[in-house]
Image 1 (cartoon, rainbow, N blue to C red):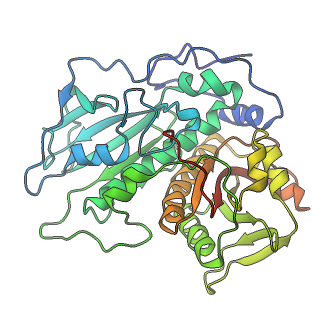
Image 2 (cartoon, rainbow, N blue to C red):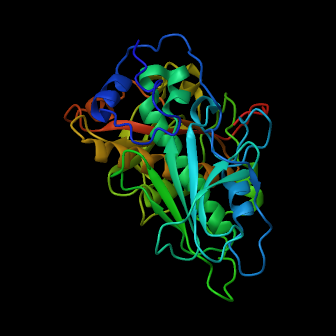
Length: 382
């Protein structure tokens, strides 16, 4: 099996990949070969590691921001506030820091294992106050386990990381952090711009897009099994959150189990999701999701769908980044409603549109979130 990303620089920058071809391979039924070494857990940032100072009044608290979003909670690096396929965490973060932050202006590489930064140089001319987190990937880490299935997972992981930063900024009182998920760049795949909070502003009111620091740190992927169909109110909240956060390239539905199995879609004008198809879909989803049999017994599975076979690289990046971003928000919404939840990122031959009788190749499953009402015993894995 080819591992074209294994010989590339650790940050993955400046290394183009034929993304349409990579996605085609990932969607095929071919199984990955045995694991290969994942390499270093974090990039070899130059210089000595620097602690992130405490924020003074009116400064953007970068130490708290990164603690709530990306920092590892254990020495292995597996346990973090943001999920990752296989707990491999391939996303790397550079900070472009302007005035008004707890770090001096400049460019920094972030080490999530030590919760430290490395000074990389000056900030670009014209950098505004606040900070921007630029996200790239070390593709080798995910390819070490998932092989040719890696690239969709890398993009989804990046979307989850962007969402974690966005929600952490909101929890710290920044009313309008700006996620950049347009999919145009091959190197810096995504970015989150975090402006300074307006003087005298208060933390935004609790809503579906504002979670407390405690909620962010408590987020975990529930280990299966997770049976039990969510009620209509909770399912509507999860669907609505995903649809609002996912952008225009994706459609959203949920495959639900008994007593009335079928596909449900968001219905903004009602309190109950709309039934778009009848019948049991979960066993098929289990087969499509790398044969994870437990999905057939999950209470429901939220699905992001779209990204046709003829999508170009920019479209592929954008759809997967936004799917990861939206599923992250939907995951926290599910937990707030007392549900068990676990992201499902690896999908093969999952042409949902064709299975429903539409034109093949136009409506693929991009990402998923398994849901249930009954929790299995907790594990210390994300």
